[in-house]
Amino acid sequence: MVTAPREILQQVAHRPWSVPNRAWVMAQTWEYLLFMHWVVPAEMLQKHLPAGLTLDTFDGQAWLGVVPFLMNYVRLRGLPPVPFTARFPELNVRTYVVRDGIPGVWFFSLDAANPLAVAIARRTFHLPYFNANMTMGVENDSITYRSQRTHANAKNADFSAKYRPTSAIFYSQKGTLEYWLTERYALYAADASGKLYRGQIHHVPWSLQRAEATLENNTMAAAADILLPDTPPVLHYIRRLDVLAWALERC
Image (cartoon, rainbow, N blue to C red):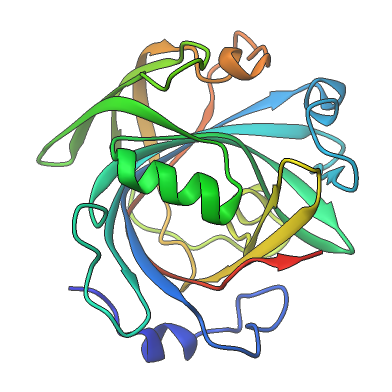
């Protein structure tokens, strides 16, 4: 059952800054999400960022995330879920940035199994969405996830993995790596002319679980010209999270 927006907005103590003083425009639910994170040389990531964004680091280390999940119950404020765009698998490649003291997420790519959603997101939110053939199977607490990019004139990018939670739910504490990686309430985007935008989100604290994963194929970072280290990723699993989003603002 989707959490009512007013209940989500009642929980704000965990945020690093206040909720925007204007109406949110979109709600969505993220399900069966896996955070896969690797330490990557900062210079490898910084060179791919637009002017005006600074790479954020934790204890001097830069991180790259590959994040498969199910996007569900996508809806505009005051409306029911949008037909044909309300439920689809999505797979993000992201790093962490800061501008004007506000930390956030920068996406190198967002693959999705919904051409209409991809077209709308590329035009409206200036985000690098790509069409992909994707499947996700759930059996008990085990998820099988596969993605193959099909977007015209885009680099090949494939992902195949099985994952599951391995611990009880816990909540990250401020100052920890888990909090730094996950509790982020802004995304950054750039249009074709290089103008920067900030989009804010809000949700209750992440209900994290430790996880294990068998990674069969992953060329998502390589498609963005980023080389992942030959080390196991740091893994966190989340069963579901209800999210509110605000319209983009120039920054």
